[in-house]
Each structure stands twice: as structure tokens, then as C-alpha cells.
Length: 267
Image 1 (cartoon, helix red, strand yellow):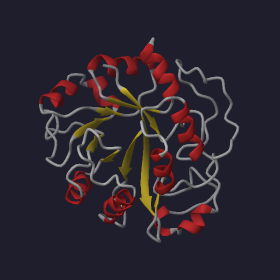
Image 2: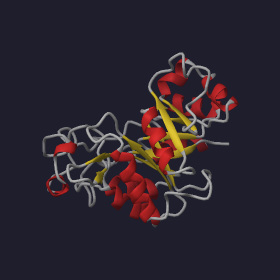
Image 3: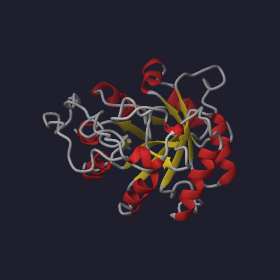
Image 4: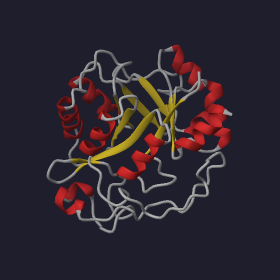
């Protein structure tokens, strides 16, 4: 079975990351899932911003956690738009990066959930960023918001519209205390001795190694599978990496270009 294609921060090879335009394009390109990062504003709203600060991606400056939603909403987020896609398999690689409608405004998680709710075949992968000054409040706010959409306690992990992810094992454990059936991914930047054999903490359902780990240790996918853990891999754009994930049986590949990666998988 081919890996499912997850749009990393939206179709971020073509639109400014974490904008409505990037996610709308990802859905248009046929992405199976959407990936986002969330942080809490000073006044308690979950917003889709990867970095600790907005310096790189917007016209403003400062840490997300110290700024209000009203302030963040006044900024232009088209600053981090790509120049051209460099994805060799991307049918849109020659498309320009002129900002389009939906490429400028702040994206709240609530707005992204509205988009997902209108696209019933699309799954949302939400990464909670840590360490942050608000600690476990991030997971509590996430579950509270998902509860409003009827997504916090799915009938089964397989049927869940939302998957929570984090590099923090503590954050994954906190999430599990809020919901027994919301699936989780423990993201991995390295395979330390505790994780090398494929085991995960009890609260983690799926493993999330970076593609650099699979290049160095492709057998890890099978070791994780032996313990019942499917693999989510980030960030997969290079054709060689796409083929590696397909061959290893990776379940989900996070990619900046859903169209290009889909094209490579179906050749």
C-alpha cells in the first residue's frame, strides 16, 4: 500500500506556510492529510505558527506566547512564501509564488478545523510545540477545541479525523489523559537507545521519525511495526526519499508538495 500524503504546513512549496491558501491548495492537490503546528497566544488562542516567534514568517516581531490574537491578526504572513517549487516530480514546479488570496492572514486552528470539517476525507495532524511557557495548557486547549467540533473522542483511533503529534513524550501523555481514543504520534529527531528497538511510550500510537533517520536506519520501520506502531515520516520531498518510504511501508509521508509527492508515488 502506498503511503498517505500529508501536506506539511499546507502545500508550502507553493503558498506561504500555515495560511488558508496553503491548505486549500493542498486539498485541491488531493492531499490525504494536512499537518500544522500550534502555539498559544498570550490571550489563550491556538494559532498555526511553527516558530517560537513570528519574525521569519510575518511582518511582525516577537514571541507568539507574548502577543494577543488581535495583534497577530494585523500582520502579513506571506513573507515566508516559497520562490519556486524545487520538487522534481511536482507538476506545479514552474508556478510562481505570487501571493494569492488567503496567503496573507493569520490562521487559527479553529479556522483550519472549519476547512477540515468541510473536507470529510481529509485528516488533520496537529503538532503541539514544546517547550512553551504555557506547558500542558496547550493540550488542554486543543482537546477543548476539538470537543466543540465533535472530534475529541472518536469511536476509534482509526476513524479519528485528527491526530495529535509532539516531540515531547510528556505532551503525548498529557493528551492521553484528556482523550483515550484520539491517536498520537511521538515525533523523533534522533533514535536514542530507549527508542532504537521500535518501542514507544504507552500513550503514543504511531512513531514519527524524520526522514534522515530512515535513511540511516531503514529497518526501524519494521522494528516499530513489530510493536504495532505505524510510521509517520517528515519531511519527504526528494524522489529518493519518497521511494524509500514507499518501499519501507511508511504509513504517512509529510511533504511540502502534495501534488509532486503524489505524482512520484503513482508513477
